[in-house]
Amino acid sequence: MIRAALLALALSVAATSATAACRQALALGLDVSGSVDAKEYRAQLDGLASALNDPEVRAKVLQMPSAPVRLLVYEWSGPADQHVLLPWSVLDQPPALDIAIETLRQTRRRNATPGTALGVAMTFGAQLLAQQPDCWKRTLDISGDGKSNLGPRPRDVNDQIERSGITINGLVIGADAPNMGDLRQAEISELSAYYSAEVILGPDAFVQTALGYDQYTDAMKRKLLRELEGLVLSYLPPQPDR
Image (tube, rainbow, N blue to C red; front, side, top):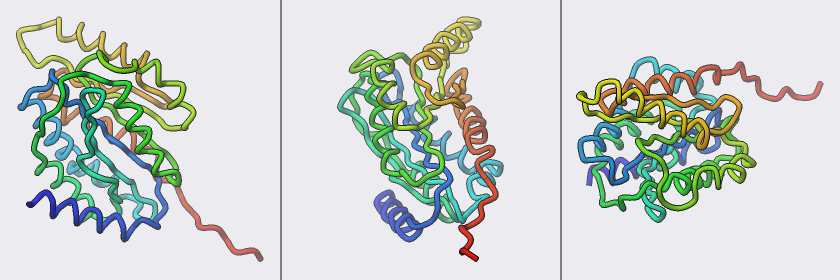
């Protein structure tokens, strides 16, 4: 009930601000495949909420209300299992950002198929970003802790997505087990290389890493700050002809 009310309010806020210029459309795709347990699921949702609520991130997001950020969050797993958690939301004022944060915190896990359909998740995110053609920049973030094992491979969809002009960044999550020692570094290095070669797109695209889900919040904060850096431009409205 609470979540439904929050989503309704978010849609209302978005509708009233739909005519504002948009400096960045940011779609975040969260991995909820079979390798992600209940604790790790919450680490992602709460970690994203905490990162968005960080004072530095809030300042960056809200720095230019005349040309705000538009945010959407979805989760992905198998080829037929992508689900929007937070619809496109215009983050032009603190209450709008607060609604987005609370929506994420109130979200509860649903049943999802166990596969890792990364290529499908990328295509789905690109389709969502196509709904925001007027934004100065359109960015897709894919978080994941494994390689694609179902559906088209990321390399099979890259050419089509690249033509849409969006940027894709990655947030790679390593294993949590502390007894893995140096193996954790080797594992995340391999997955980071895979994302760098097959997933990210665009001249400024990058891969952020979290050594485990316990570091997810900090990694998400660093990634958001990097993406938002430099997007607040001095904007002048068109001048009338003299």
